[in-house]
Image 1 (tube, rainbow, N blue to C red):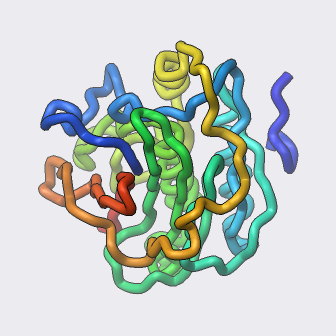
Image 2: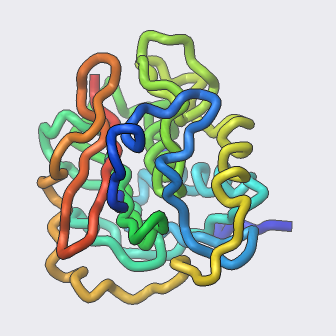
Length: 255
């Protein structure tokens, strides 16, 4: 039986080959361009480093428990340092942070760094400048954004990107009414089984030391270049070149 720590307990990097690789994912297949963590067997364990304030901890616990229901992966939560606004990524795990980032217009960012098709590190950032307001300081919004941004760091795209469509019952769906979109659905778990159906000869999971360039990575404001837009015209995926590698970031915007 799989165990998630703290009981069983919501916009990334590879060379993009042509415009087809950047096409929005359809509901029937929402792998994010084939990005995945390298590992030699399933289920693999991915660490979420908790650099969140206490108010966010329940939502991270819920997200870790939700994604650990997948047959191919478990998530464990490791202690970090609350208040890490910069959220510099750590090789081999996903760092999860919150801060008052200001009037950026975004609620959350989910980023991954990729070598080839393999994710080597990830970060998730929650913007309390919005989550501290009445409109977004709700369980539904916090669960949706946390679940979705962490979902991006394991290789998932959105199932739908039109906020005017009916909810699909998954956090990987854009919506203005998050009540029924707070957790993954069966299709998310099925897609993860497809993404991780093969074995790799090496692993990018589990290294815990800072990358050599970690001390100088600036995550604070430069997302890079927009490479994909939602049906409403807003940019949702950004690409940034950094020291010979690429980072891609998914953005969840405030309405």
